[in-house]
Image (cartoon, rainbow, N blue to C red; front, side):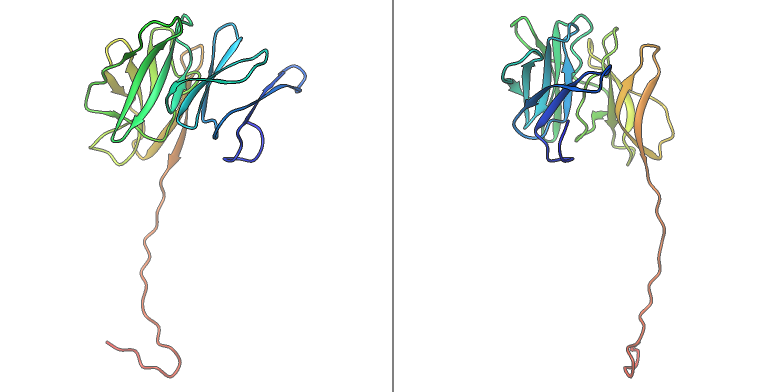
Length: 202
């Protein structure tokens, strides 16, 4: 994204080699997740509760469906994984790029997908596992987790529970990187102080 933080509706395609901006893309709303086809010719953008398709060579973005997040095109480049917020439920939809019928992945297990963290590029492994933050009724914190896209089974990754994890990505070597937000608090005790000339009541 380029422009003011949390207020921009523009994306830029830049050259890593030269650091120059090659193209600007304007979409409705503020983009929150991106993905691309393996050949780099098309990017997919989650913005304004919709999924948009935009050719990298030029042309206007085209809305393809509703959605709040879009993950890396499937391992073989045949489908998108779309995240849809429908309070209190979050759904995962397999959206084929060949025009065939989309399919919802039936999520199961004692966990649920954490809200307000859109899935994105780098979340899907070659063996069809999705990295995603998971919430549960037995913890105040959001844990890193794995969703099997074939079965819908969700599993937590054991870590220090006193952090909220989100925005995860997997490297080619299998290492997982995540943003972790800790919680630190202090307890204060306040006592009344009498104003000048005014007795303190008890």
